[in-house]
Image 1: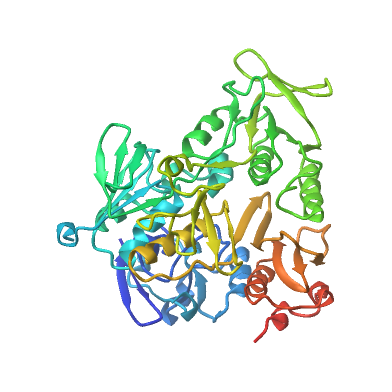
Image 2: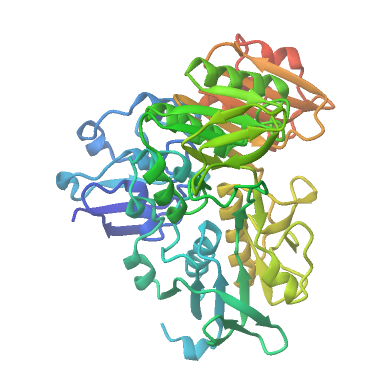
Length: 106
Length: 411
C-alpha cells in the first residue's frame, strides 16, 4: 500500500498507508486526518477535501475532470497545485505522495 | 487506551452519519474513554445520499458506501454493536437497556437515532412491491423490482422521489411521478424551481402528474394498479414512496426528554438532560447562525451537529452555527443549495432558468438568505459566502452575469 503524507496547515504530518484504488479523501477520513471532511462522500460537491499537491507530483497525477475544475474554481484558496482529494484514486506508484491542507480547512 | 483509568463511557445510539461522526470526532478531540456505537442495522456508518442515486443504479456497492472501514474503528478503539435496539433509557441510573436485556452504563449518551420513512396510509400500502428508500436493505429489496421496462410509480415529488425517478429513466424503466400538491418540490423550493424540475423530468421521459389524489393500491399481493380518487386508474409494476421522514424520537420521549418534532437540543447539542445529547435528522436543534430552532434532514448538518456534540462532551463547547446546505443529483443536473428560503420576499435568477445551468437566489429585506445553483458550483461557493455574510445586495447585481458574484461579498 502506498504511503501518503498529509500535512495540516499547522505543519502536523500524518503519514498513512492508503490502499490502491481508494481516494486520497477516503485515506484521510479513514485515518482521522483533521482538515479533510469529505462531507459529500466523494461526489465532488462540497469541496471540503481541498489539498495542495507537492510540486514534484503535479505532473504525475491525472488531470482534473470538468466537475473537479468547476469545484476547484469555487474554493477560497485555489492555487496551481490545488486538487480535490476525493477525485484522486491512489495508484500503486504513488508511494511518498505529499499533500498539504489549506488554511481554510485548518 | 485505558478506559478504566478515565472511567468515562460515551454510548451513541444510532450508527448513521451523525452517530459515526460523533464517535470519530470524540477521538479526534482526544477523548480517551470508552466509545460504544449502537446501530439497528448490521452496517457500520454509511453514506445514505447514494442510496437514491448510485446505489440504486448499481454503480455503488454497500462496501463503497461505508464512511470509514472496520479497521478504522478498531484502530480508534470504537466499539460497534450492530443489529441492536435500545428498549429504554434509565436516566437516574445512567444506563440503557437493549432489547436483549443487556444493560449498559453511560457517562454521556448521544441519541443519533435519525428517522424512518413516513409510510403510505392507503389501502394496499402493505403490498410487497411498495418500496421506501432509507437503508441499504430498503434499496436491496427495491433493486429486485427495479428492472428495465417495468412501470415505476413514484409517490411523492420531493428529492427522494425525483432522484429515484431519474435513476429509473437511466435504467430504462417507465416512470410516473405522482405528487399530491400542485407542484413538485412544493415544500422546499420556489415555484420557478419546481417548474424547472418538472420540465427537466418530463423532457427526459417522466410522466409528472401533480395535484393527484390516490385512493388505493390495487392488486393481489403486489400492486398492479393505482386507483385515483377521481376514479381513474394507472397500471404499475412497482411503487416507490418518498413522502417524508418521521424522526425516531420515541426513545427520548419515553425517557421524559423534551421532544417537539424531534429531540429538542440547544446549540451545543444538549437535550433537557445535561448528560444526554442528540444530533442529526432526529434533533430539533438550535442554530446560532439562524437564531432559531429547526430539524433538518441533511448530511452536512448531521455531521456538523455531531462535531458540535463531540466538542461539548470533550469540554470544548462551540455553538452550532453552520449555514445549512444540501445537494441533489438528478440526471446530469447537479443541484447545490445553501440556506433556508423560508420567508423570502424576492426571487432572483442568474442565468437562464430554461437552460441546464443557472442559479436562483432568495432574498429577504435585500439580504441573500438562500441560493439554489444548478450546474454552477462557482456560484454555489460564492452563494455560501453571501448567505454566511448576510450580505445586503441589489437583486439586479445578482442577476447580472457580467458582474462577478465575488464582488458582492463584503470584505
